[in-house]
Image (tube, rainbow, N blue to C red):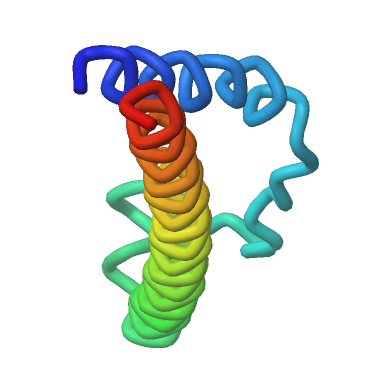
Length: 103
């Protein structure tokens, strides 16, 4: 059984360098709001425009983060499925070898 855990860990570790190379989209949240300064914030129109831009930027970033988290979860699930399939195959091969040695 230790072999299976080691094999699974190696299979997972081998995939790590490729994850760093993957094309991860950058957030496209433009324009980034800039604080207009204290004097400009005294203008009701300027303050409302800044607050609107800030809210839009925050919503865009939150959407981007939710999308990235979903993608990470899908990658993790795919990796775990592959590891489980590999472990099941190695167990079957090991069991078949033991059964063949007993005959």
